[in-house]
Image 1 (tube, rainbow, N blue to C red):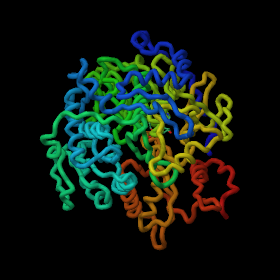
Image 2 (tube, protein in one colour):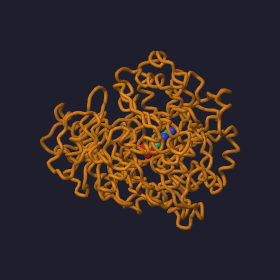
Image 3 (cartoon, helix red, strand yellow):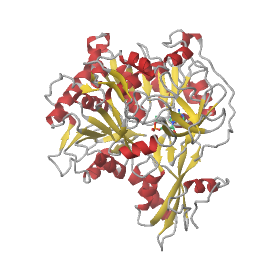
Image 4 (cartoon, rainbow, N blue to C red):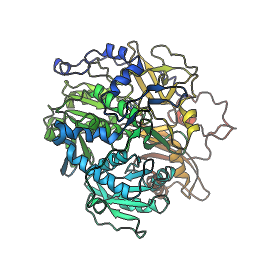
Length: 634
Ligand code: WTA
């Protein structure tokens, strides 16, 4: 465990919001909102009242079978109904719901009413394909309006969606589809990235050869590049053909509060990706409430979350959260620095973005080009900024604050996870901010930093980040792996306490400073990559006998992969093989797996039971003391 890290950073700057921000806040009294949140059942029940329920819940929280909590017991509700249908009888009917923009400057707008019709058409089409409540529908799509339509259509009929991030390649893709037995796949011809078009259909074709449960592949013509419909025909159909003539009306399925909403795979410390399962009502309540609290959403806002819908950030805060609050959500397809490093700022200026939610890795990347680019554009529409994905370095925070927010936009550094579904530790805009700190647990959340016995650690000391009370948007289990759900998250410290797998400390004001993962998970450009997934990819190459990987710090990506490999006899780690291995790992896992360095070794440090001691590799690599190695073999 790495939780006894020393505190090297002593950040003492504090920033408070200006009066023009304070004047329009929903929550002006932070402390008393946190106080109110201590009665979790009362707090979350009040928040749940904002939705349209087919039938109200009997009980807010059922904690009789920890850690299998249930929220809003026996309530009946539908996600798509609350995110879309309910707005079409209000003033928002003709308001833009989805504003799609891409790096080529093309745009597409869907009002709430148009979105409603598109969702219904696709939902009807899914029904015609035989999709029923509880079936799994997967997507391998770029950031495009159709992806949003498809996901909402699933929730409208009670199908469970499972999005595969379009940056993953064949190996990772196949594994995810097969684990959840997806019945339908929706993909596209390609995606725009840095002036090129990336051929998604080819990846999908290759994956589909290994995915026997998929009965139909629906293809969106998104980029217009020529593609071949597959030989396995009968199984493939174009999106447009499929929805042709479908009615634009459909009753929403009455879902139980605890019915599954989606599965999203994320990396853990063991090889297999974890299927994080979220359910309907609690997720809805948690996501909408935290978005509203943290970003103070109002009529007239233009919300832009730069995260991909392939990750939880996009699920919760690009798609569902903003639509549940009836705001306009901007979906951007492309790289932040194409056609030039002012690309994002030009979008902010052109459309008048008011709230911008992004990742520290993107900020560090854009920082490299200096203040010139943000200064070329009028960014005065911005009111609140936000970050997620990894700790933000105070330097990057200051750059963002000065150059993008012009020292008038508070920055919400939001800590949360795929598993938590919603923001957990984050300031509200009223809070005094310290660059690099995610501030405090949100109202309704009980977070702490503890030692291995579960005792709170003294101020300034590192410890395990835990959540001590259930929260509505919590994941309910790991799909097909209840045992791992219990053992990974609920067993590390005594009592029924959720351990996040992160190391943190608290300062004298009770502010949380997240220091990174305690387990073998890498954070590359904010993406979670399991070390063992990368190792498996290496070992699947014919030249490699064994591999161990650790994170190597990187000024832009946060971390990149450093690999130690044992090669088969007769192989030498020369340029050709290095290139080959990089290509192979990219092929297996996709471009998210960024390789920094490969080293050839004769042996790897292991415990007597054969587990690779990555901790030892890490310490050696950094020239640090390797610590207790009594369990080391030999
Ligand atoms: C890290 C992303 C510090 C953390 C929503 C967590 C952060 C993991 C922050 C979850 C933050 C996320 N400060 N670290 N503001 N936000 N993390 O599941 O290590 O992709 O456990 O969810 O990201 O990553 P995931």
